[in-house]
Image (cartoon, rainbow, N blue to C red; front, side, top):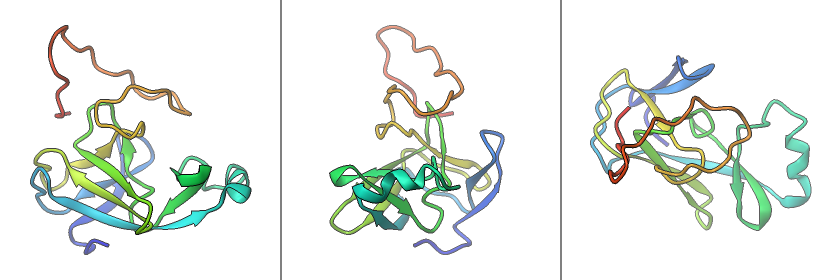
Length: 141
């Protein structure tokens, strides 16, 4: 978990509420290791009939992981400033800065699982920015 002074939840211009940096995070620095409540495959569909729909991570064996702390509140961006990695054995989701994140900046992740991913999502996100042909995607927003 992270100390509450390191990050906070506030209204987001991206969607609803989001997680914001309470201090500077350097690229490569872990922001949060959010413990997960694992929901087995047999019970996962029940989550879709609750307010937790859309707030959980796909987990191994087709189950779901409800991240505690701020873990289920990070918003999606096609140009995220952080990434997440699932630690199935440790039952945590780790959030790591991809670049410097300044105090007050919203911390965003790409919900497809990879910072440059462009897979389908269960909602209509803001369109991905155009990439100049032959160039790598930027991680800055």
